[in-house]
Length: 323
Image (tube, rainbow, N blue to C red):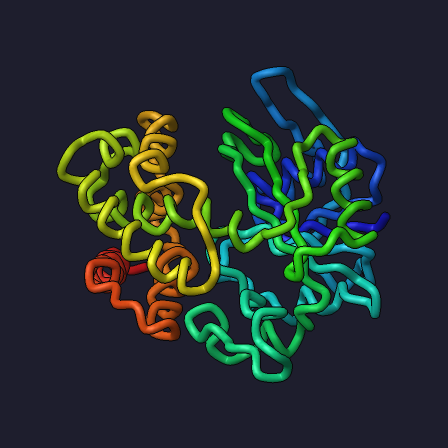
């Protein structure tokens, strides 16, 4: 199977290395020092259970590798629209697109609304470039639970789970998703096929929409946000607002807010990805994690006064930091 991984940072490089281990014909699309390191020495993945090293084909020019059987998009969500034309060059008539990114996906309302009247999320795709370039019938959702960091160019260090939950937007167990899941499992990933990937997306998003912006505003690590009464109370209130929106869209959470916060707190004294990006002077992933949820609240008629206020503050934080 010919597979391109578009966005070979920490998660993308780890995913690509796993697929190479499984025997797939993989091309990693990266840039900068990461690209050069992969070209020179391949990808090294350091895990608690051991280290894997693979040689990998890598490029920063998607046009030179041609049509693929499958494209995994592992970019930050804000980078997806700008990369749409490059990614589209990899798409043949039967190519599958796997969106392995945080937050709400562009195809969220596919199969929920009758075509061609599917609602679109302007916070994610303001000009409609994703919907135009990528028919949502091509899409498969992927919810990633993995702590990974590029410790030096070409080297990824993993510290927790390697779970990649896969799901068709219509909940079906299609031939294509079964093949992909089996390939990923062969490469050492935990890649179950979910009958309701939107519920899985919300399960992760529920924590991200609160913990990430609160960490960027306060500088606090996840354990502080989860277990200190003040920030925990704010996170709890944000998550309660979000639950109302999710439930209006047909999602039911398998646990209450308190348990979900406790689970997040198990990460310990880690920094969220948004706080890390802020400290490194990188653009913050605000709209996919919180802005889109506020937009969904407007669609469903559920008020989110606290989330809306936090969204305004974290946007101002990013602006003040020049991001």
